[in-house]
Length: 445
Image (cartoon, rainbow, N blue to C red; front, side, top):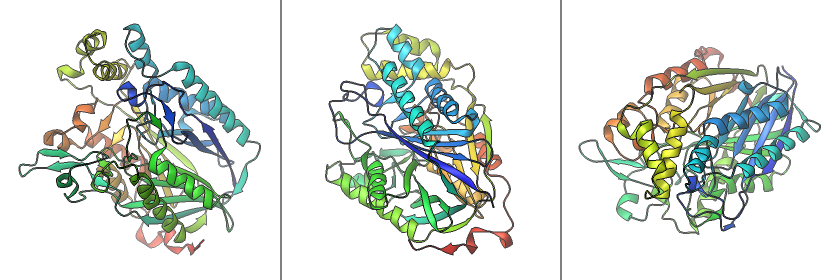
């Protein structure tokens, strides 16, 4: 059994009035329904420190993603490979891409990100992490629990009889015809991984796959229903630090169960919250026997279509007659195209009985389901929305089906590459006779 320590930290990273939201193509900040936070833990005493951090931002891309990880690595006295940062992906929230912002500034366009505000968020979060190092708590057990979430997630790709996308079911679907289509392929299970000291819980980390928006575009900053569920869980269990990560939700929204009415935010919050409490009731714990980080570099091909060329996007971003959205998307494409290499990082935190798979981009739910099928002997948690530089990560089939997501996939079809990477990170299956988490004591707390 390993005896480790955990530090917990939170920082307010809410944007100021007038700041761009969702890359600058919806209304900017005019107020705040509730704050945006950086929420994280640092694990100590089991090798070099490990950092897990979730940001209530829409996306973190390219050099902005690397800077977040490096600043937190420095604060925790560890290496960047052991720092895992993800966006939760709320849309009334910033997109962070430093190079894209510089491209926009050089072409007299509309801002994507206030760089001074970005650096302030890094500083506040790093300081909060440093402060946590002096008040850590001992942990020696890891807990695992499942809770089913009902009437939240639905697949947004609705196909016609020929296998092509007919409708896109967005986060708020006002059409009853679109709402009435079946849920489609989703992962209905919320997974809660926790750290304990003996019989005392210390940290709970929740993973669920859906776009986390009830409504957006009104300029009112919010962590939305997933962030609000985390806070509600924190308020009724104040001694247990709560975190939330969005899984592979590139093709998953609440659209079947949400028409965008403001009252639905609280309804969806409570459905996520109920999944959290149900997972807690059936949590099992086991001694921490390992804490190993594995990383893989994924080498991707740039798309060959004209709309993904440097020349085409330079024209768009420099053209003042184009809309703000078109120019800013072009800047984000250029930031991806101008990376020194299109290699991108995926990682796994192996805790023995459980593994946390950390993936980039807006991955489709198929990758999360595949990961769980690869290791049915493990409690596999999946966080997507790491480095968002490559945009969506659809399946190869989705490119043939058409629809919205492939237009926002900046890398060429790469399903085999991602699937093989996930397999490497998770490692070989343990023989069924020695599955450890089946023997845990039920907690019912």
